Length: 637
Image (cartoon, rainbow, N blue to C red; front, side, top):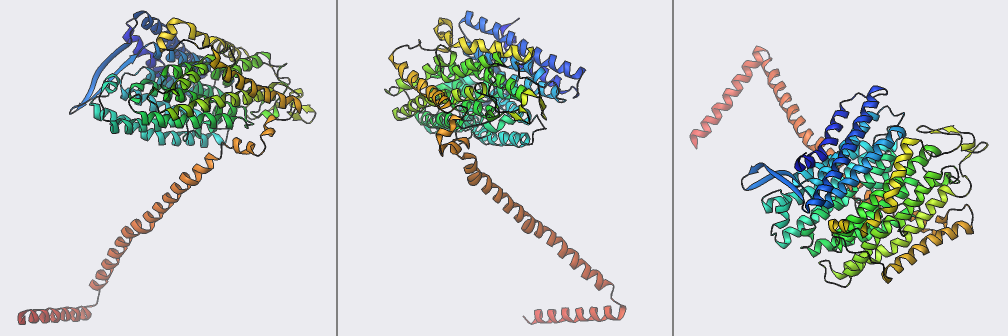
């Protein structure tokens, strides 16, 4: 097959099969089996295609690209096409692998869901849209994939209609990301209008004025903040946990939040020419890194711990971009895709078995769920940066890049580089603390899920969404195999940093194993050791109590939802009510009043026409007299 055709098929296959899946009727039986086959086939074919294309690009040593003119508006040329090198296909490989695991996992996880068919189709559309963003050679194609992802996220987050919070979470995710998307659309419009083309290669080579470029990049960063859940547009992501757990894995690991990072990676030559945009990105990343990490320390919901950790880890990626190391950002994106997908799917296994998301109602699962426990050990170890797991090597690259940027010589201001480095260092210890707390609360100690005769798993119970077995156990095969497969890259993917081909494709620097890594390792040991000591000092007591009054503050995400409600939501609602009142009482009243006045005047004339003949004659004579007087006065003047 022609390589160019294969690149086009990469996003097209899951998109087309997703559209076919949407045409299936909901229900069990045949439609469900067909929907599962379409979803799994689309992800599997895309994965094979990505592997083949990666091999082709690696052997050729140059990107695959093709473009065609779509339409012209005067001097403005809009194109459609693709352009993807080895780095793009590594990302595509991660997207397809996670999507395939999610499709297989969901067959069992949603075994009793009557709306499984549209769910599987929407996952395929979501996957295809992300692949379109990854491979698109022009900004219009990228924008189409960007928007389709937004629509799919809305549908998938609100999928479980049995949860009352799901529709609100879906609407919140859609609206918050749309706020950023308005800026993203305007930024793309500025770049295209000034360059005269939508082809990304031409846009990157165009000579923009400093003011135009900075304005366009800041607008793009608004969209990045929304899609990638970066401060201040991050508040939708923790609430999005109302969606099915496999969707959480897909959003957090391979699509949506990764899209913003990849867009900055793709347009990084423009960012290099704008120190102001890099400084804004550095501030945004630094706040997000610590905000997400601290908020994760006090969550009781298992999925919300992982959601806030995603906010923080995406901050590491944007921080690497800000300090001038897109290679480190992409490397962490790939390792994060592996260990975060592993963690969410393993979390789904726990929730599916225990019937609750709350850590305060778990405990003692280590002996009953050994596969899930060791998957969590690998995933949380990679998240915290324990050597030699994947997250250690990618975080090491981010920290090294930030440390080098503090010496100057990079486009980003030195103060911004210091901000990123210090924030990333502090978050190492915090991340190790909440990762250790999660592992201890869920898998160690006695069970804290009490029924009338002891732990609920000793008697079994039914939940609105889960059938909880009498004794918790590892999930069945179709859920267990994806978890076990994802544990492999979560543990070993970091070692790819030693492979010359991988380093060359990402333009990654050689691993640094010198004294510089001692400080992160000390912070990691301090964070994990503190959580462990608190757990064993007061057995069974949540280590979060050691945070004191800061605990509720961290648990609320620093009340930023409330602040946004006060500063944005309530004023906008008040303005909407004012506009509605003005429309009803001024505009509508004016229109309706004019109509009433006209009808009233018409009624008076109608009544005048119905006056009796003597009265009418008097009125006619009176009118004639008035006209005569007017005429006489006119003649005198």
